[in-house]
Image (cartoon, rainbow, N blue to C red):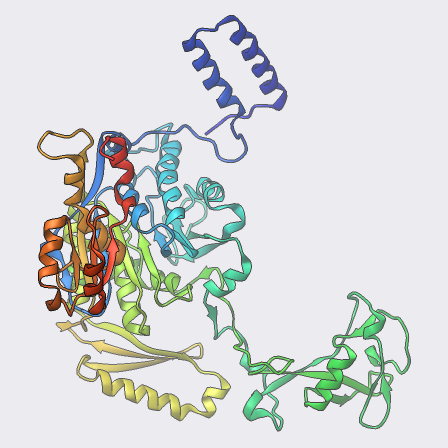
Length: 628
């Protein structure tokens, strides 16, 4: 992993190198000496490991990565919505191209990388890394570093990444993430209880895993806007009292207006007149005295509180003045009269979601398939819902069986969100073709299954206020039942830990409700950086421009609503029929295709947007091969 080198030793070695440099002035020696010097002076704090090159790194040296659409696997079930994408191939290849189309655009990343346990769960250059491999940690870190560095570039300003991991690589991964995302950007390390026990464990049974959470920004104020808050987290039972303001402020509970032992100030040590004319000071004193006690509010705020019913007096035998002064904490407003949404941050402990659910879910959607430890839908849904953005772009570049994609689709169905996903996975053992794609397709189209399936349609934690208006909740539940009556065999309600839930139940041999959505399926491919003589590299790359445009804009280039032009001939043809393009929203053109002022006037008359195909798709590659 790395060795410690004291500052004194490093200085001595650098001095020794200077002496060698004076004796050996040939180019080869100077280059070698400089390399040694760079190694000695580079950063030594943090995680250090032996770096390894992957097969895909070598391929990128001689070939240009592209995407190739598998058109027969396109799903187009919702004309009004954007497309989701399934990218088959090495995820570093996919990330390389996503860095061109989605830099700064991804709001949520969830990944479940190989845990590197040595039990045939991590392949490096097509070979399983075994427990006895002395470089197993450094190979894994090299593998992860490349991908996480790109992931950070893809994250939006409010972007958050969730990374599942267990004990084997938790420590190295934490240090690696601190280096890539920034130690201050770590939000938390979530603990997930994935099973209830392990009777065959040696010593102590490990029943938990971790989910590291990092944000693109270290701005804690931005985090308040990024992360959803748990509206069911506060204890409404505390709000038991009511007054004449209950309709607008809700119930309240009283709290002492005075306090001791914290930052004494004379300005907060003054007398307040009680209902019987007695003047009381903090701590129930009847005169000014510095005993460390003060009021929490200043004179002006107390005056406002008395005038607006935010302060009350209680008789007290323990106070010398005979009175305790208290302020009211209302449920619906703060102590300045502003409306408030009482909630608290979600906690980093996840319970009641067992890993075994994941296997059951795959079997229901695509039949029995051999896939080790797929993550449960409820876990991924919970993580996505921690982000307060129902329009989030969600990326999973270790997509495996496609749990993240199904979670996004079902969440949108549940809460009306418009989230989209991009999944990257390889096709080892044909998993992408026989598990991931069928799972997404069946979720979108609806699928038949054996056994009973329950779908959550409504949930609400019942508070005291809700119980007073319980008829409204029952009316809402009945409305949902009427709207969904033809989609489910029956309905089931549950009330546990104060949470009321309504489920739609599908009995044996049932079929799930379709989730209309759009999906495109891409495979990774390469173009040789050396032209084969038939076509210029630029001409070959132009054949794959469509995939890049569709990916970036999440659309379907159907040459009707969205049109792509690849040369002047296609431009001239479009202009001949411009009046028939009333359904067209956008035309994409290369930078070398130009419209005249008159052409643009005609296009703008029917409100078509013209977009120049971004040069950043392949400019760097064309410059390298000398075609730019």
